Length: 353
Image (tube, rainbow, N blue to C red; front, side, top):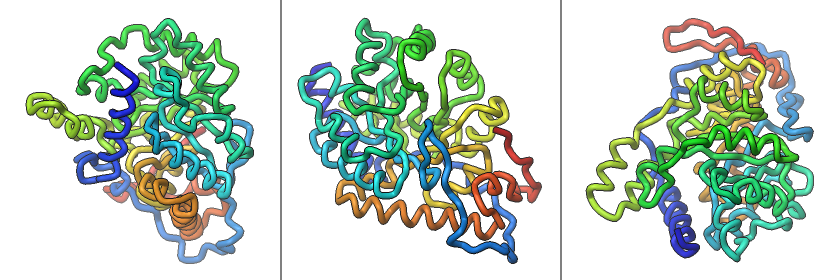
């Protein structure tokens, strides 16, 4: 794939995701199947509730991650700067989008150490596709991805469905797991593995952790459908029909969190994929997530200004704080033990980890 075609693809992706009608999956996240038991007498001061947590040896003010959403498009430079400024102001983590174009072309598109200068105190995560690790330069690209932004960790994203329905996508996924294992032993920072919206199963999560992966982002179904995005980019009706058959494919986010947490009680988990608000975030944490990621939900704000991003997350964080207050949870540890009912009214056991 040429540099120009990769850049065009990233621009197409941004345009389509910004128009949620063209990108959303028909699958629900599953969070609506759960309900907290309301605490009418919390005996807490709302403002004293502690939402802070540790993420890769850094303290964040809330368990929020601005998830990977941008790649090589030129306008991504402005978007990433807005996100970095907002993340630094809020004290939350930031994961940039795929660095493939910046690594394989002569243009960095703003993915430089300037991002670290803008956000010196927060966890900052780089991003590379699993398919690129199979290339002869794969490990070198991964190292450069970390160095170019002084990342605290590197995300490897898994997107086999998107590649399968995409014109010119990566078809050969043989040896990817072994490549990830090699990366883990070759890189000086932790490796995080995430899906892009179809979910990670317990079996795949276990295999990744056995290779040394430090954290899993389940990235379940319920938000952006990359099959639907690629259907919008299809060059003919046949390709569009193939892709649209998978618009609802994947494991709902809530289900993915529970399943992976039950299998891997000690592994740090990120929940992303259709997280709408702070109530969803609270449910995700109660189901077993350590952090909660949002991408498409904040993309429009990111195209406007850093202040718009700040205002977006201030709303989400306040919603999460109120969810803690109304479950009698003074902090995230207490929230993980709050009473949560399933769709039959049966209380769930508290997650481990």
